[in-house]
Image (tube, rainbow, N blue to C red; front, side, top):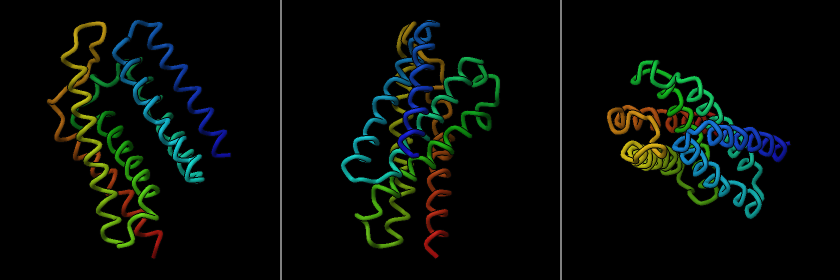
Length: 178
């Protein structure tokens, strides 16, 4: 079941990336292509660690970024409030997925419960920060590589949203264990 969900979500995401290329949204295609390829780490971990949660994480990443591409195609990113619109919901969801990844990956590696929860939140914050640098990079590239983002104008709010998503997931894992 998890493998089928992952494959279907990846196919949808790849189709949207191809559409982005065909519609000359080169920056968006590269942006998403890197995420598509980077998420292959999840598939590798699923196979090596025999952990089906990684397949579901991969499907979640593909679906989240597919939604991001669709919002981009409809030009809805910039017409919503940049501080409270789709972008922040996207970052909260991404922070939760990052927290989920950290929770699965660290579950056998970190034994202290508080360190485990802190690591989930800090991982979401750290990767969110790296994402902001990556996002900024696309704002300084020339067209057609340029991807319209707010660059560094909303970085702090994005990192707060990523951290909130990670914290919500850490709270969910805390509630589950009780």
